[in-house]
Length: 392
Image (tube, rainbow, N blue to C red; front, top):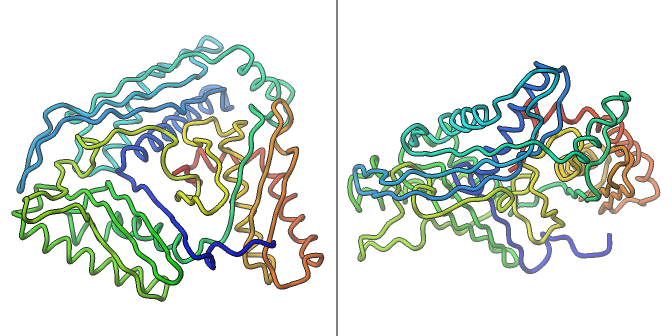
């Protein structure tokens, strides 16, 4: 590769939207619904049927947060929209009920201070898919062949994460970890991390929705915020081995008695709306200095939808190249499909690497990895159903 590595360029930007961010909630609800549909289809028919439930919209509610408590005045509204096989061989799927119950289950498990029965209203609009796309999906099933690409699209991936990318990703994971929640129950799940590097200087800005019932007053808020900031800074500096500047909730004003507190731990209760595809890519980050796809992977069927499969496999290939091929410093993978062709026969699978080693010596092991991942691509759907691959 001829261009300068991202981590050596003068500037870099990386972002991550955490579990409770409205956009991330939409991604996870769509993906969770796809997984539940897959399980129902497998149980009833022994195979995953055609579906794409990749449209979700979160409309923020109205809340009144105050020190020591607060209330939800108007609930959050969530719309889950998509296409699916609803009837086959005399068996009928109540997709609306499945969608609502799967959403409530995810919200209950992942947002500790939000009650899906009282704080959320869920609307499900799942309808049959178009005849041509359903026929394309079922064509390979009838013949017992490799799934056919649902679209002409592409996926991209890269490895490894650099220092800034690791810092941003792990900052959110640290704050949303069970350990930190045990020590600081005032930490809500809605956490957004923005990392900026200017030459060797790293600055991390965190937006953290505090839970109001765990904050006594404004002094208590600032004391707890500083304690959290100190722990996070120590953790990140230990992780990447260098000094970082770290800020939390920089819009807070003690003089105006204005701070970021919420009843439920997410800005979805009033401050923000959400939508599938506006947040993290499949590697969990938003990285404008790296190649990215704009595909929203969440909720797409895992059998033949290129926007989901190729982005995931591209990252798998890049990571394997880094881990298994000696002296490769960076790997980028690009894969392009053609609609109606077997998913493991892309138009292009291009792997670019950065290495001090003679690139001709790397070609064979890299091609072997790419071939292996193409061969196993028809089974990659199982990882999505089992929750092994992230979409946000």
